[in-house]
Amino acid sequence: MNKTTTHSILESKAETRTVIGFDFQSLFKDLALRGDADVAIVSSEEGFSPLGVSGKFFERELGISYNDEIRPIARWNQDINEKITLIALASRNPNSSLLGVLLAPGENCRSYSSFSRPNGQKPHRDYYYNISYEAIYYACYVWGARKISISHLSASGRFHKDMATCHVEALSNFCDRWPEFAPESFTFTGCCINQNHLSGINKLNTEDLKVGHRLINVETESVGSAILLHLNWDRI
Image 1: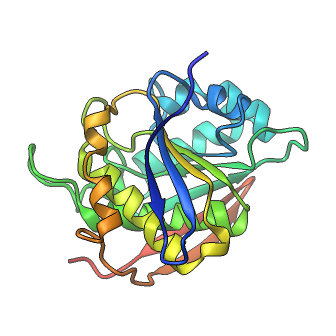
Image 2: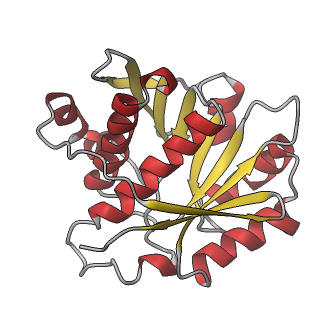
């Protein structure tokens, strides 16, 4: 059986410690069943994707129909929705290994079109940072997550090291602000990510790359089994 490998330890100003780990050979199911994940952050991209591969597992663990609820709202977020929206799906299964799943927008979503840049340029920092922060906040502050797992939010084969840095920068700022809710671990999993993509993370402990967190507007909306979190900020 595969296991999570430690990449680094993220220390907050309050001296909490979060293990930044990776397991690129496993699915969300593997991490959850061996106790290495209680929340999954996964791209809204539906089909041949981490969400599509994990659909049956998410359906069982959440007690929410994949075909009737998860797939349609993921498709809506990818192809129709112009807002920057996180979709929170809390588990309805009392015996679940997961507290919930967060469907996150990314490069393949319509909401990214106005943020996209020519091929070869860096992904938009505000987009990925704010999505990461609000996903981590919801997972830890609302659901009480202790072990977060995350897959790529890019198109297939286009994960960028700055995306990983944005994820962990958001985690670092969250842990500084809410140390009592700091998770034990944050694990990168699945395809399209490799160890080189995590190279920028180590600099965050020296605060070379960190920027202070800026509060943004988040509007919530209930739709079926989901809570929609609509993110809005001034675009730079």
